[in-house]
Amino acid sequence: MIGHRGRNSAGFTLLELMIVVGIVAILAALAISGYGYAMVKSRRAAVEGCLQESAQFMERFYTTNLAYDETPAPDNEAVPDPQCSQDVTPYYKVDFAAGEPTPTTYKLEAVPTGKQKDSLCGTLAIDYKGIKTASGTGGVSACW
Image 1: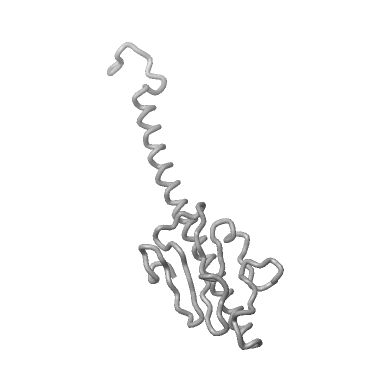
Image 2 (image 1 turned 90 degrees about the vertical axis):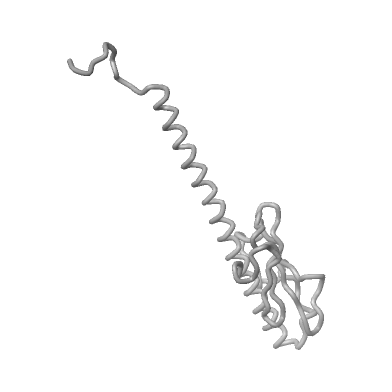
């Protein structure tokens, strides 16, 4: 037999096995980091929707009562509207910035909790004029 070296070659060597394990580990690391980024981004989109919904609620309340300051807090469970979905509440704290709103102004903010590590956007906010802000390194254009 040509090319036979006197041993059975029925299986993998340890070196071949370690190369395969290394490749699988690299692919898994890339997949896990990509998944984490996608989850942060999707939660951010959900909280943006929550802030928009809360701002709309504030405007409807103002239209009826001509004041913002009697509006219940966004996280008040006794109020059916606005409510952030259960997808948002474990990762962001949505509330009024600097306490309660005044009769003519308000600012809503979503502060990420420890589970939502988002240095790109940080705290997202929207005020009574519709001005959106983000405290992170990405700025408003990258976050809203």
